Length: 123
Image (cartoon, rainbow, N blue to C red; front, side, top):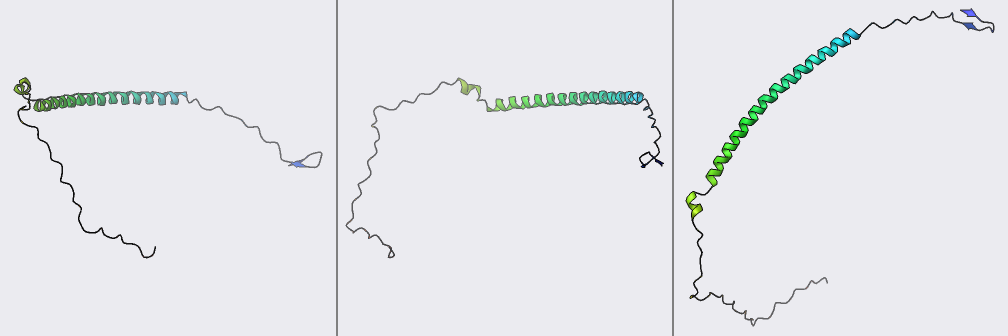
């Protein structure tokens, strides 16, 4: 340690710091990018193959469902001879008299007195 003119002690001056240049990382980065591109191409190719097989399965399943739908519609459709029959019109017989309902009998009042209303003893 050295003493200055004011009487303070100071640490010796530090050695200059030498900054080294970072090593060139471009080749490593380029290799990583190339690996990622190859893996992405592989993933896209696999997805296309899977999607194509799923499309084929979907088309097959859709065709089966359409055939089943047509079979069910054929079962539910009326037979051809029923479709060609003409509608039958029913006409009421004008000679017969219309049926009328008799009114219900009148309620007769009984001679018994009406029941007394019970009252609450507390009120």
